[in-house]
Picture 1 (cartoon, one colour):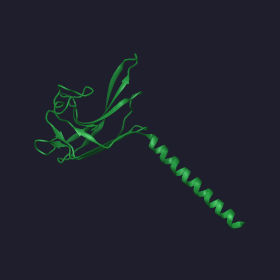
Picture 2: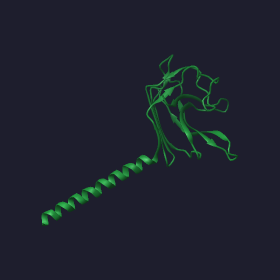
Picture 3: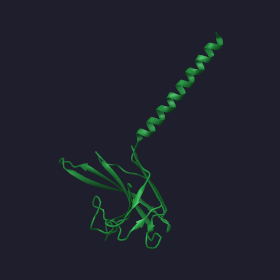
Length: 168
């Protein structure tokens, strides 16, 4: 009888432990608002300012990307990693820093649709097109159809121009 009680207690403890573990995983997944495991580089007809996406024009020449990933968490943390984001023509990245921009379709105070583009930050980039960014943003509410851009940062005389975008 004593062995049976010990066995039942073991099963009970294992059941509680596995239920808690599953609950934590579910909670962690719920905190991840979106995750893109692929970014796409700018190509014609999106090169240049003629065909912007959400008001952001593309870089002036085609780019390519070996790998890219973007994540946004409920607490506003945003993580972006790119590898091999380079000009098609040269196979190199001539840009010293990449900007990370979160774009959302939203609703303004008057109830009209609007686009909100938030610069999450700037991160150094290598000549081989590698960069990693971790920062925090405060997305608008609602943030409908979020897009993450990796871009040439804006300057006093030129707007940001996107190099890669979440999607495939």
